[in-house]
Length: 104
Image 1 (tube, rainbow, N blue to C red):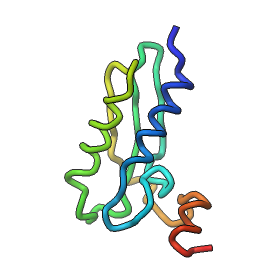
Image 2: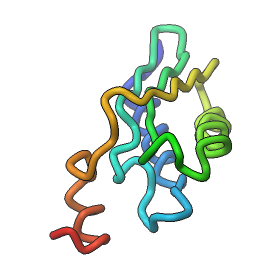
Image 3: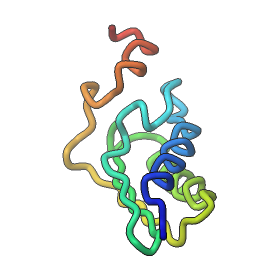
Image 4: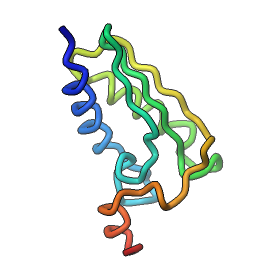
């Protein structure tokens, strides 16, 4: 039986190693990850956004994220869906990210 909760935790751990190069906070704490799902066949689906469509890493960051998530042992396929709706805004950041960036 697949431990989906454990796989999702491992995915979050990996996501916390991915950074937007312009902002010194990982993409998970920035609120760029909208959804993480692991299905019964151990396939992962992630829905993410970027701070803006004009983000300089729009062409590279999603691929980097997908490749890093693929390193999680026990996962089969990884599908990353880059979305723009709803648009990212500062309220999506964790308290930790807001504190680190001086918003609190």
